[in-house]
Amino acid sequence: MSITRTTHRTVTFFHPFHLPGHTGLLPAGEYEVDTLEKLDPDAPSRSYIKLECHVHLWSVKEPSGGAKTLKVDPGALEAAIALDSDPMREEERTKMIKSFGGTPTDDAA
Image (cartoon, rainbow, N blue to C red):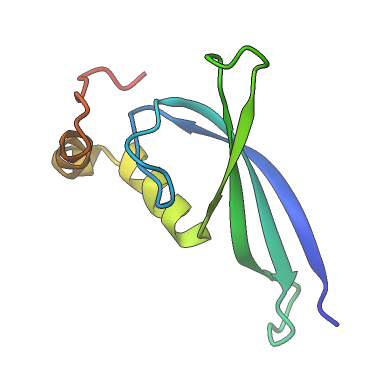
């Protein structure tokens, strides 16, 4: 039997970004993320292994305020967060945004 837990956090993206499993770019903004984790039985102290993340995409265009949940690998989400927040990777971020037909902006906030 494995012990699991779900953690919840809000992630802020300052630039348009891409996540595997979604076509195109997602807009900058705040996103709610639920992460499913399991207890690592081999760790010398209590630690958890991230299994999957669910990113909640709220739609203001839907009349019902519809929500969609995107299942994402935790590594892919962390890579997107790192690319978004690292000022030394601006060129890489701009190239990624342009590859999806987006327009990079100079302001980060």
